[in-house]
Length: 554
Image 1 (tube, one colour):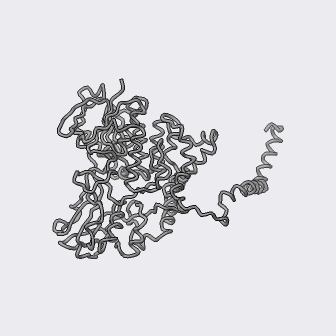
Image 2 (spheres, helix red, strand yellow):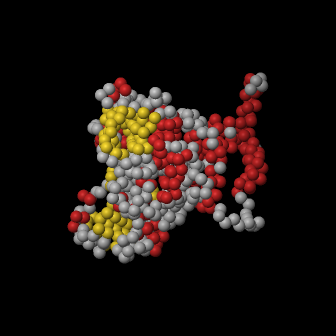
Image 3 (spheres, one colour):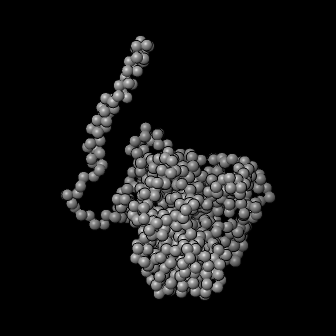
């Protein structure tokens, strides 16, 4: 009899969890409190339902080839970066292709998830749900929590003295949908993450003035990289990851700063990272231009509010402010879980590899999608789900709960004593995390093996973009289409761009052509120079001497 799995949420991570359950012959039942799939990607005009949704103008900041399900590429005519509508269409296509919708119970809220009395033996859970006033209880062998970390707005009002005196409008970015209603107003946006940058830029087109307050500063990255290629595909490569591990951190940081300051000097634009703060990055193509044109003014952190003004840490004052938009992030919580599991799951340090709570004697509950990656969250959640479902089946093992709790508790104590830095809130390095989870499953691509078996594919895997298809090349869940998906990923990248083809016989010869023509002669010349070098002559003399001693046996 197949094990029954409760999947909570039908967003990006919930859909991948349903499919991964089916791939492992498990029986999923997904509970979704709204009336449709997609989670925050399902746009609504208002936020009255209390759910976090995308704003109308949102465009993805990870390109399509880096942010797709590993066995379901985007259609080739989809743009590389797309609006929320097209991305939601992709999720719908994915759900329909793998027939996932029939496993979802819409308008159903999960009220409680509790261990059964015999949990230590069975690992089973009692799940209580409510659907339009009707209550239900069922027993499940495992639970996958896919509610994400955009659940409750974080409103640190206590950090802003005098804000309760402020007579203007105060809202969190969760409530923001469009720039209508902000015409002619002076708006203060607090917080400079991806959302803060987007909201400031969009409001600058209609508001009288936009002030953007940041405590730490940020590096601004463009979607379009050198040569016009998607930024993610240019920087997320295995050979670059390898070089980053080898180079000293000071050298890496120096190279990174030089590259990021090439387009514009961040210090001149008021965006440079505050001394002592950790580097952070946002994706925004227009913010520097808005600052250059004066429609967005950068400000330091707010010190105090009055009825109509804001005082800043640098001593400046901005008066006649009409609206304050807080883009201060979210807090994640699990109201349906019981203590101490409820509190433990909010501390990432107690989640083994960001997935399994350390205190469970039976690993039958997994938190999927509660990660911050320097890359695609979708790809990360899918790999988490693949791993979790194999753990549920007993095909993959994790360390005993006693060991995990001891290690996590020790880390927490060291952090409290400031002996160790708390990195649980930092964004994880994409390739390192993906490879770590893939190694647990047995799907991490072996580059040396591929170079022996399939050099063309190995070249793309090591030197090309680390796209999700790489984790379908071998091991459990291997997909026969993975090789072709990797070899054609640039075709799908360029296809939506080539809407106007111009024949030009004077087109300069490509670099690859020169490499093909001159590569072999240059390599041969280098070998000849090495052979004639003093080092080579010394080596030859040593070899002759050894041969004379051993009678030519070497």
